[in-house]
Length: 389
Image (cartoon, rainbow, N blue to C red; front, side, top):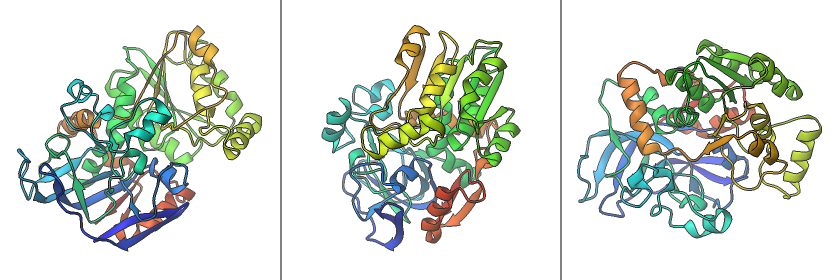
């Protein structure tokens, strides 16, 4: 089969690799119809995620049709069209029973390494390094899906692939980020980063009752898409003015909730940006805290900070004094995708969302490597790239 494989920093290739096989009694094999390139995949492309090995198959946003199943798969059958959560969950551990699926204790066979780094490990994740379990990803013609009784959801034929593929990560991540804000009627929510997660956080904040959403980015096309969703846009080209401007827009208080949909590879400028870049280059820190600083300083007292943007290690110059003294609540986490994917599916069926509206590029799996290059260079103001198999 054809699959997109990682070979090093900015070196990914479409190659012929062996087809996957059933390895456990509750596995399924799907023939992929649509997969997507996530902004988080660029972290792999940039070589900033540890424990990648040459030849690893990338991709964690995908869907398709079941072509083979293990004998213990209960409610799914060959021929079913399914969407697949990016995080792999066992369904019966302490965390899965509480629907904290991304915290699953049983699906990351390499959990030792994350426990050494973070004190605990996350669930296994498709196509996202051996730190996250070493599972082959979904940017391939066929994919093995373990624990198939827990995560995959059967979908009907009238629903469009492009909408459904957005439910395997991007929309649920934006929705959970907005839900974590505990939005009350009349609230103002600020969203840093208008990529796919930010776009869906904006739309979800309005679904959950926000009065106003402020969208912050530097890319004109992304700001335009946010504006079309009803957001008030702020161009972040002058980073030094962001905190003061948000205070001015909210009567001096700051937004009720702030969402960081950017994460640890935030690009920043000026003296503070140079400081972050130097420390990351020298491996004195791993994560840029530029957006995190803005979020904490901007949020109103007793407000909520929501972090769907990926952070992987250590961040420097985090304003802990402001965080504590302003009585802020921080909510974070990999998306509990097996839960929120189904929330998104119901919203799609009810006609309340149209996730495919953010897609800017549709390519063949044969052109996947070029898709990464386009996304990385932000040619044509990329928002989302989907790949057809």
